[in-house]
Length: 98
Image (spheres, one colour):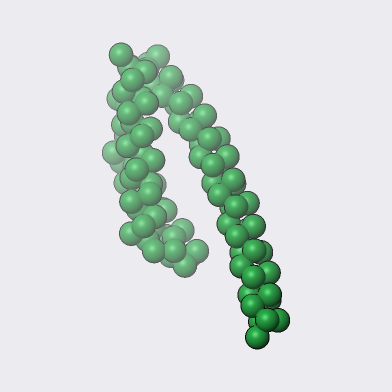
């Protein structure tokens, strides 16, 4: 029984280490993504383009839903996640337009 608990603790630790690495990847990836969306926002502001692009947003959501299915991730969760990111990007773009 003690060996089983020790093995379970080791497996749990390995999973948590992987989760920690993946969380770091997510944060750095989002940081990189926002660098690009901020550049897009500045470009839009300089050229008086609208802060949002509903057609592109719809394509991105459709694409992300497909990717989520491929990754065995709930597409509805992926859609909510992308909608949250898009709304934050638009908020940044609107701020740059002022």
